Image (cartoon, rainbow over all chains, first blue to last red; front, top):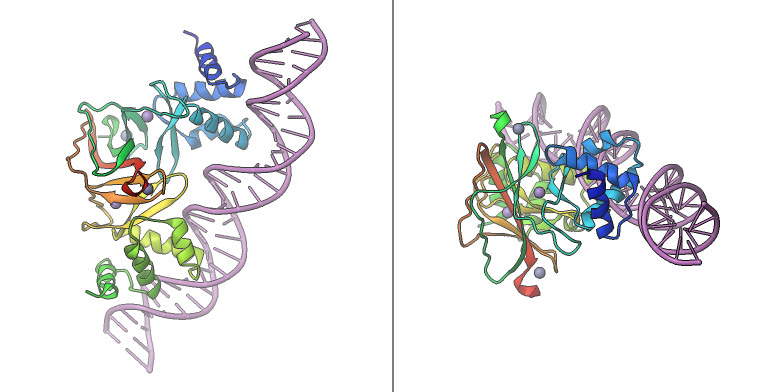
Length: 138
Length: 138
DNA sequence: AAATTAAACGCAACATAGTTGCGTTTGTTT
DNA sequence: AAACAAACGCAACTATGTTGCGTTTAATTT
Ligand SMILES: [Mn+2]
Ligand SMILES: [Mn+2]
Ligand SMILES: [Zn+2]
Ligand SMILES: [Zn+2]
């Protein structure tokens, strides 16, 4: 299936115009083999106005097309939402793994299910960020 | 036990000088009932030079006296390390809970133990950030 | 196919976070 | 009391992220 058409649908479904910039940004994010750092987006999309890049990212974040995979001190990482997400709800059941060697961030499904309970608290969301050494860097 | 003396020991143990600024910053962090946001530190420590505040925080972070409890978009939250931590190792087994209503961040021990496994990966650290509504805001 | 309109874009300007260099001050050791 | 390295304050700088506004363009209507 053609990516451009798929992205166009994704955008229109959220009442966002399918502009060339948005399609290009989505293509870059989707073609990256892991979560893409902001610094990489800057490099690959030099012809984007700074503000446009931020506004486009925010539009995609707000509408549940992409999500932040990691917010470390060095960089902010973005990845496509695999499940169906909306403005109201980002339902991700996966964790984010960051390799301390190559700094690659990826969305991974864990083998075991994670259950977290805190007394007297209504839990809405659980973000798990795992760091260590990835397969390639061991 | 006198806090000032305790903090002086904490600092000297890490080869950090026990200066009035460091003692004051530690007192502010320790006396706060939850993880303290950076914005709050700014307010409470207006007489600190901006750079000094950053450098002091970084010194305490590096040496394992305090830790970041949450790095959200709105603010960065700091809390005392309860376990014995060092430059090399922050060993926290607790999770960080952020209330979406009052924006309070706290370090909480979960009732159940959390086990995360990812194939072909050497896990070094697991950071869990839970958000929802706290007891007071329900 | 042309007109319409709200959204998206580019530019300038701004605000805040965080860092670096350097001269001065201060905590700790002798 | 003296010496020294660490800590501090100030100026300057870079990076991140946002806002306002005039112009352009995607989607809709005629
Ligand atoms: Mn993810
Ligand atoms: Mn904590
Ligand atoms: Zn790696
Ligand atoms: Zn609350």
